[in-house]
Length: 576
Image (cartoon, rainbow, N blue to C red; front, side, top):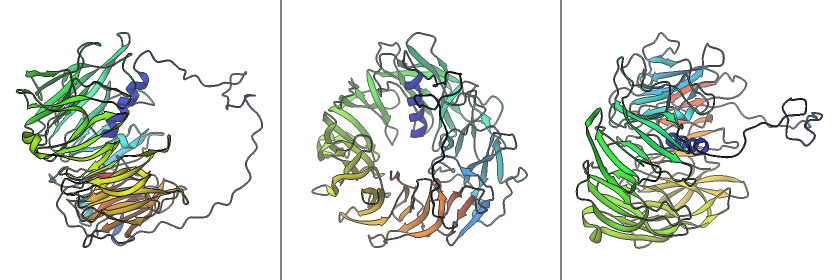
């Protein structure tokens, strides 16, 4: 499934450039034609500010078990951490991670992949082009945003040779462990692609078409990934994605691969005034194409691949009054559509057969409910809370939910925070005033949760740990940036950051339902992207990328993490 950030950037870019927009991108100039600096007179004397004494930061320190993999002054992991390395569960083989460093071509960047399983065994790896355990993917990486590149399962999707400097336009590439080279999966008009978490399959958007006035279409392509010539994915259909009449933030299209990777499903409007229509076919077999349903939105395929869910006759309201009928039908043909719940604004799957949803929206607030079994809605539905304005996270089984009921601020929005489970008589109140960041993470089965609270005195976010069964919370980190849960054993996180650019990586274990006040240091002054390698390896890979070519810069691995779980990592979060 396409990474949420990558799809979000694509949708945002689509909204900015699609149709009939007004505004100007012209730069201010001085009367002589030179660039202006925004002052009314168009120029003036450049008077340097007085010198400021900046305290020197200590040299970065490695924790026990860390060692340097790639000595490179400006090397960086790509992705977001969660997708910086192969992450298929269970692992199909060795774990690989992707990083970038300057190319030998002036102004360009290389993308490399390194075998961290071999590195974890203590093998010395040479990333100069002669080692089979460190392979160069490209010397023309699109490096405007390194988080665009990353692994979906064991498939690396990356963007190179862009024809534009801002939003990517060009060939998109894929690589999988065992391939000696990456393969193009789009033509030179590719825009965005997503891989599958467990199968060698992908889908893409490309070939933008805005020749018809006031609307924009893209080609959807999808197919199995092959290590051979002819690897470009075949076209499935041209999809209408946006028109001039679409309100800001309204999206009437989707595309995903099925949980087993055998089907590609997509929805769009056949005409600008038509209804969103859902279609499906087997990957690479147009003869199996079928129209599943019309006038539907926000569809999903159940975790057990047996059912469709969607919102029928969804109103796409932008004022906080979203509403549609939650329906269910057989997958893949859509037979036997059944209305489950009326007046639903949003929903998500919760375990194999469960659904969590909000209904009865009124100016952004709604009732939060959990259905444990879609085949017995009346008998397994429990009301969790009322007046819920946002759901931030849920446990993998869907039974623990982290959410908010109040909001404070306009630009820097903060929230109260609750946890609810169907077995608890009342919600667990984490913080009643709106001082929490809009994010949180549960452990694998929802036994613990981590979230971030803003403290005005220090003007920073601090990490808090909550035992869900006892509803007890305790502070464990200062100036926290992000975290990743490791099953139900603990968390890896970034804290002690004063600038949002570098921080200390630590790990912390849950012991008898409690969390130590301060975790064990992996690395001080680390960059903000780190990649836990569990459950395949008890390790984490990270970057030190300090200014002035610090001699300690490079890619590092720590192989001494105490976690033993073989379960997949749970949700990740970020603390402002």
